Length: 155
Image 1 (cartoon, rainbow, N blue to C red):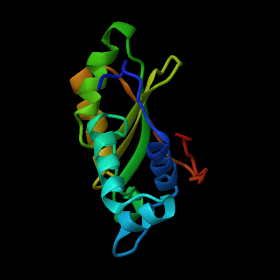
Image 2 (image 1 turned 180 degrees about the horizontal axis):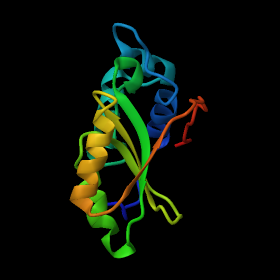
Image 3 (image 1 turned 180 degrees about the vertical axis):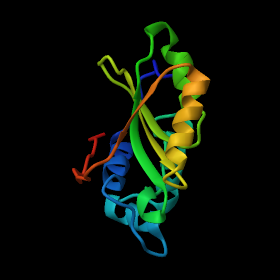
């Protein structure tokens, strides 16, 4: 599915996406638990998640780790990308395994991404490699204070 293709979700898909944004059950049979809550068979829950991943409706399904608590580094970064190079630079940035996610903003700094590295020193190394690969300055904005906002997107 390309970015231009509009995602198609039915009510069951939406229920799964909305339910799992709040957490994944930590039980022996988590998909059965999700299915039980939503009135869906376990296999159908798994198949729907797999299909949404395959179709690009979901970009990721997995745990979120707190890199800093595991001894790693974490930062928010941005680039000022010329419009004609946006897709090229996005592909370069997204190829770095340290990039957790990348998104466009309507701002002079129009590409923002999160870096997560195995060590705090890995941030500077990764920033340097992205600058070398793109030829653009990376604006590193390390966290000063953390706030939990519970961001969710209604499907």
